[in-house]
Length: 225
Image (cartoon, rainbow, N blue to C red):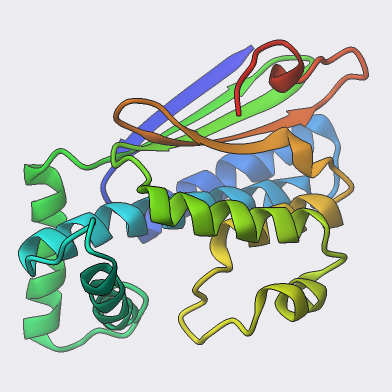
């Protein structure tokens, strides 16, 4: 058995390389070609989604946008997408002012205690992965998420998903977690082994990779969404 746990605010290049190496070594141990890259890509999507959720909370707080008011929420979301695209998805930031702002946001995450918790739990029957961020998903966010995940579950591929869900904009809105479902299906695993749910304080993404035919998935043992 092996269990690894990580806590972090932002996924930097060093940690990204560490994760990629870990899953590549796991691929070699399990003798499953391309499995390491596949799992890493899924983890990468889940982590980015969790970090983005935490950053959005800070953006709303800093700019006094309401989470409850529908009009304000929509406006805040559009502004956040632009800010996020520039400051956190742009890998070529050279402007000192932008780099300083990025550091300020990371400090804000630390000040508010907003972290992402990754757990990788491995035994002979399964690989169990949790990605947890300590901002609880909002009702409107959950509604959109459930819709997109449901469509992804029944889509053949990304193109089919886009036809049924709608055009994906350049920021990739609406694609993060549905992409995880599509990747799982493409690799031959059951998308039902992927779940997103919440508790009193956290939003939790859980994924299981069976390594044995004897493995019973958690959803068949517990009444978890």
